Length: 463
Image (cartoon, rainbow, N blue to C red; front, side, top):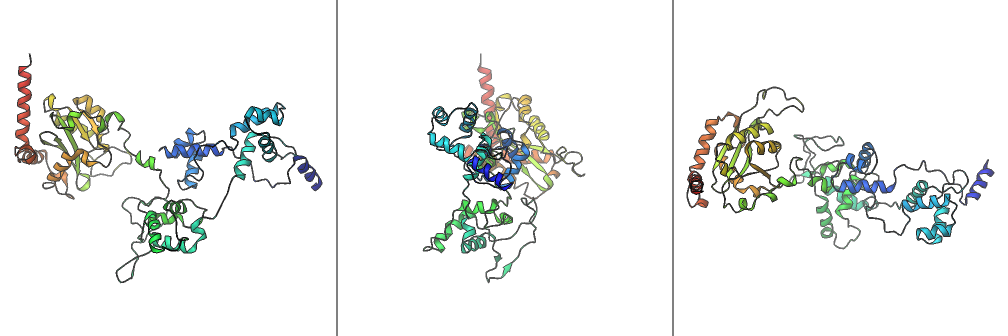
């Protein structure tokens, strides 16, 4: 039996090789395409579907690597044979083309083709049977260059990083403060739950501090990206994944930057972003452009605010709790807090339609879920709705300033649902009767009345 294996190996031109397993169905290029799609902001399921593998496999790839690609995403340089070229070699060899003929058609050196046929052929049957999938599998396996990570090979550096990341919190006299007891569950901490207390330096702070603490020791250097890889990519040694609980985000898996940027609401399209708002709204020369928002109180109570940009005239939206608010909340059921999308849409439509059409030009809101029915609001009132960019409150500066004034009447942490519609109208009247420096000490009510008078006169003089 041993002599038969030896003869087969001799015929194959390769010594006996212990089988590393079945060639994978999914090649390296599919993994590269998967991570490119993930970097664009797609979910692991959508990225897997886009590169031709099952969504379950995409989720497994993402979790096994901690949300970080373990292979280079750079396009092939052309130095090495691609999978398409290997398929062409297999076809030409099946047509009994010689090595030089194959090399001529591929535009490669004959020695390159000869080495490929010798090194990466399938030899299970004792013959040099060339198949593209097996050849690509051999090439990928031989191209691996595993090496010990810097943290795993430097115990002193590892202790420094781990102490700054997960060290204990202490008082001024050095006594340790343990903080709340928490348990690592392999996922990100949930809302309203205690988190582990630790020193919690960020990886960038640790990397930047090393040259300060060790100016003459070049071995005590590491990049912040290497620390992230040691945390999220298991099997490289260095740091345990549960130490991700000490990061600011506390994520158990790393989230690609594009996916974090793409977390805006799906009802906000490019056509309704603030960049598409008319220029006349920016310079406040034409009245009728409004800014809106919600102020939130205790038990998810809320009051809606509408402020006109030119006159600073304010209108308040009454958003009482909906029926069943005090009962048990049904999972994925309708909003009961009074400021769901339908309630806000109806309140805005009811309030804004009391104004002339010339004062209903546009409304700018933040990207809150309460404006998910903005398209229906536009159909009902003719009001164009635009959305500010995420985390950009200065784009609705008039409304933010007005909300600050309203907190004098509706402080944070109080139940806003106890105020009636009459109470809101009274507060709005108080604000609209207050002289403003930006209006040359006119009140918003007087400024709006003047605008209405100008609109009436212009309509009356129109032939």
